[in-house]
Amino acid sequence: MNSKAKIDIPEILDVIFQYLDRRDQINCLHVSRVFYAAIIPRIWRSIVMPSSNQDKKTFPSIETLERFKPYIQALSFTEVLPGYVALRGFNQLKTLSLYNSYDDGFDTEEDIDKVTDMALIGLGGFITAHSSTLQDITIRIYGISEVETEPQTDLWRSLAQCPQLSRLELSEMWVPSESFPFFLQTCVKTKRLILANVILSTQSELQYQSIGGISNDSLDDILHTEPQELILSITDTAYIGDELNAVQGYNYGMTVRCLPRLKSLYVNGRSAEFDEIFLQELSKSPSSFPYLESLEIRRSNATDDNLAGFLKKLPRLSNLMIRYHRGPLSLFCQALQSSQACESLRYLALYRCYNVTSAVVQSVLENCPKLTSLYAKVVTMTDVARGREWACRDLSYLHVLISTRNQVDDQDPVSKEQFAEMQRLVFARLGKLTKLEHLNLTSYTAIDFTGGKTVDLRLEAGLDQLSGLVNLQSLTFGGDMEQQIGVQEVRWMVQHWQRLKHLVGTLNGDDSVIDEMKATLKASDISITKSIHIGGM
Image 1 (spheres, rainbow, N blue to C red):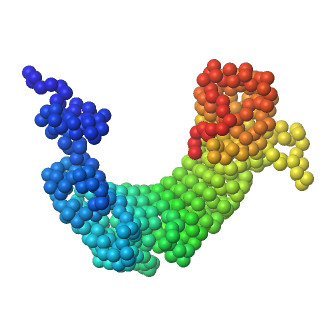
Image 2 (tube, rainbow, N blue to C red):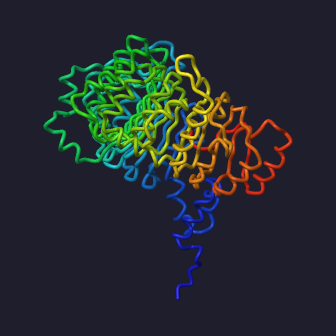
Image 3 (spheres, rainbow, N blue to C red):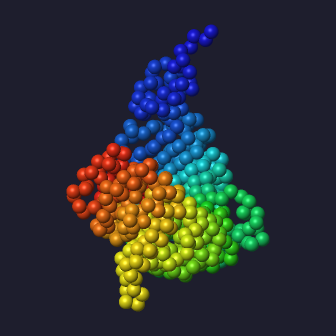
């Protein structure tokens, strides 16, 4: 029988070491040979190399790295040190990161260029030597000059030669014209690409097509390959002027058109010139983006028609988030109704798009049958009551102010009886959303305290029509100071909404009944608060 202690079994040791910090792991090296053999691969799995101006005792020597390189799977540089990037034979290396800045400590741009070129030469050679194993690469070289140099071409060529590369993150870099074919080849095959302030050189449309290989004849073959995720984080910086932003809008638009396997796109732009040209080029694409499922556009200044044009190219869109857009999005909504995306959309967030009209929100509710989450500013009770039935019966999260204000005007007066009837119609619509988990009736959040006047949450007004919301976990009506919810309503909620955990808002202005209502809620472990945001965004 094997007398070996159970704690010496490598599989058990590996589990134990997961709960030890690096210092404790190092101390365990001296326990036994078995401990040493089991913990060395874990200690050397991921190594971070400080910069040369830090204490050299804090990072391993070249000789030490050479000795333990068979165990290293992730290597991170804060500076490209020539001796270290000259090393070869990291046969397990999967992740490589470089976070570097060459814009401090030099008198002239020529000095920066020289040091940057040396870094690129060393880094390109290191990547080429380990191209067969590298899967994840992050490069941030601040201060890199916008000139076409051979070292830059070498770097982009080395990236294109990594067959297993699945994630690439680039920040504050320049892709010169000579390097662009290698850059685009890398983009086409990488599953996850993050570009932040990466300046692209301009190519002709013919060059984009020849580099990307996106002819309609080859599209069918491309569609049978695995989709990819592309994240573009485009932000305005001091060295990117408005004119260049417009140029970059074209460059990025044409580049994205070369990625028919695109699955997810995130754009964070603050330049009107960039946004307009970027989406214009995407809307002009001769083919669609058949794999694109998730689209997030933040702080966009693009026009409504360009957003609408791009939407028509997205037959499988399921997640859409538009943040801080100033337009009404009416054309965008019309395009949504007429496109295949209307049938596939599951998540829609129009966050702080204050000019989006009630009619647009009502149209979404009427025409998107698979929608499970909706975040928008407002839909009026009149539009809901006079509109068609809501198609989105699978909604689990609804965050929209259902406004009852300004329902009476000179041109179309509404009597009290009509008002009450419209309110009951709103409750009827809500009552059919039996999968609702989070219902925010006032568009009230921890960021936006304004809320608004919504439907009367009393049984006599129609609350009883919501008895089917058995999955409801939170109800928000914050900002509506006119609610007159009483003890009877609270008891009804406890009885019918047995999964309810949170109420957000002012129940009643009458202090004489507040204590009894709070006691009833507390007995069922339901919280009541005025100033927090529950669920969703």
